[in-house]
Amino acid sequence: MSITASAVSLNVDDVAASSAFLTGHFGFREEMAADGFASLAREDAGMNVVYLRRGLASLPDDQREDHADGVILAFVVDDLEAELARLTAEGVAITMPLREEPWGERAFQVTDPNGVIVQLVDWNGAAGR
Image 1 (cartoon, rainbow, N blue to C red):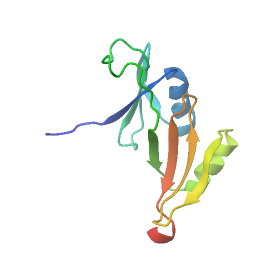
Image 2 (cartoon, rainbow, N blue to C red):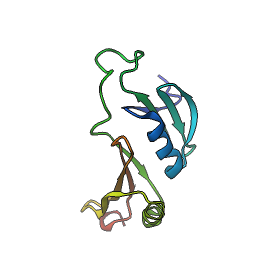
Image 3 (cartoon, one colour):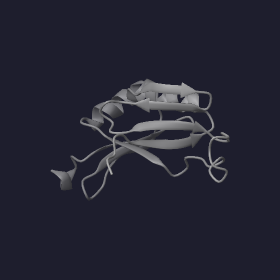
């Protein structure tokens, strides 16, 4: 098997709102979009993020009404404090403050308009040095 691309697909109520959040605050670009669908990419993200509107007929019956609950989009960044300052200045609510775990991970979280959690991470903590 050869994998040529990867994506995470999330069912949400308002595709446009989640798409605008990632494009506006995280530098993704919309590669494809249609009614109830958007595929976003960044060259350095390693995956596309796809949003599908809940209830789409193209989804299998047992997935149609699912929501992206419990999913965390995690992105490792070079300068966590700078990203925290930038997002705060942009008016994005920080839904989990910056914290450091004993194993060296440092992270904070924001939440998009559909409740999808976006976590920014670095590995510069005590255990990661």
